[in-house]
Image (cartoon, rainbow, N blue to C red):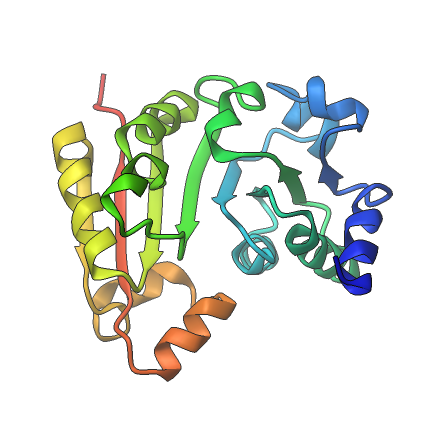
Length: 221
């Protein structure tokens, strides 16, 4: 492990906006995000597989009336986002170091307002289908933790993953599914607020089109 990577991982231990194994809140934060961590009742938005937290930090700057949590298992990556949030004086940002399939250990039913998935590993091989973040096993988790009108946003450059996701979501029975296969030429362009991840910068520079979708999970009661 490189010196810089090691330093970042060590920094997570003292960063107040990082929650990870070994810290007290890691085992007690479920259903306590508003009261214990953010100390308000503002809506909570998750970025799954957040990497360096470009969306977590970017959205937090645009929407101070919401709380944002970036989730990733890579400690050196979330350390970058944590530092950016601290430097920007953002009190509405947290980073949670855990695996996505463990979300229910940290969030209660109907606790989350929005979920963003930005450029996840498409797991293109058939053997990786279960690890795709839009696999039905993950969708079931999202449905549980999202509020009644909670929504999911997805951005990806992978056409095969996007096609898989559209099929999976339709079979799952979401509502108001809206999508485009060319975000920057679409009227939906305004929905991503002009924020780009590092991967997105690379893909668009190479001329790749960006796929985007938005949907609600729960049927109106």
